[in-house]
Length: 510
Image 1 (tube, helix red, strand yellow):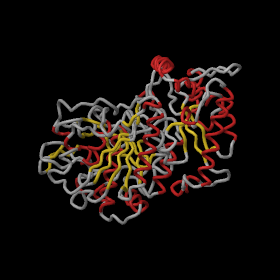
Image 2: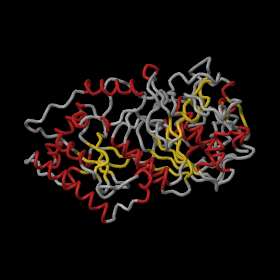
Image 3: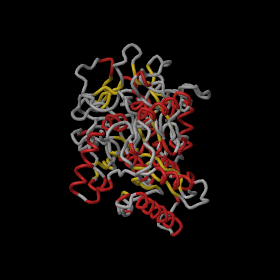
Image 4: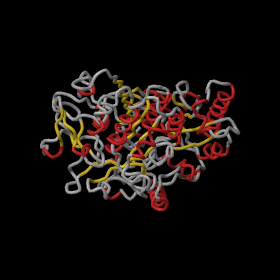
């Protein structure tokens, strides 16, 4: 759903000429106040981020701002619902039967209200439920994607006890470039200093930071290689051209494990939307998969921290920022699918945003209640926006927030976020040269690529957790978490920015 205003107008104009349904392009209503400008909204959001040092919550916005944000994006909103009086949904969301009479009645009530209110506001529209609501029969959780054009409808919905939230799905801050420096477009390293890796049999490269004394990942491999543990990676997918995440996933010293490649991201405009499939067009997901699970191969490629773990890799986003409706839906659905897979123990998410998304949070609650240990990136931004605190969903209590530090152990990586929500850190960058970060798989071939930031720290930590869990697959999430903490550099103290510190993998698996 990431369209420029010009492209959006062109699409609407085309649809008006070709399809009667697309008369639902945002209509105008007489006497409705003008929406706020993006500049006005961005100023409020940025001032809030500065004042609170946390993410932006739409629940704290005014009705006018929520409506304006919807108008200034694509008018698609996320509507969370529940029976009136239902309590503690965060703890019970995995138990809900959406097909039950109680829940389906609430859903039908809200659909009827939105359709009737829309047609009352715009009599010429003649909208039906399928015109305003997307994928009515495919919902996993009590949340709906709906197009709302009118502030009064939003005001009434927010007053209903059956409505948990109503949020714009695709609003992004205008002029601030928040693309991670470990995002898309990274290529194999043209020059690889020998100090940045060691070679282990049968001919695999170990990234230099894996061997940092505070992490000692190689020291754990005599005890555990992650065998039997499935890690779900929710990211931009994996490259079909990277054989180490394809027909060579089981090669060298990596064997007997499973690889699943899935797609939950949907591209397209409303009725013509289609699933993108599992293929990575960005490069970020391929890099994260390499850090977690790349095989210990014979071809000189880098290996993953848990080179014998199973991998379930999702294309849920197009890049590292969860800022479009299709990405929010993709991440949420991947969380539910992972939550329903009893073999998945760990979920790694090197993605996020400065906006809290309630529909994604529903997926987090669901997977957490299913016992999953979820790692999320604290944030990796351009240096002039790194004053932001820990981003969503790493700021949630249900996730384990991870950020990257330099090899001197007292500085965050130059574009990494830090804060009290951070639980662990991983060495990701040379203090003497910020371009020399960790090493991982590129989109194809065996020549490694550099990758850093909290993204790489998160994936590496997820791999270390797989090593620990594999020593006893019957452990609980809390037991694994305690072992990670016990083996950390700051334990039993907790640093205000770096949490428990780096995890010594060799100690953690003992």
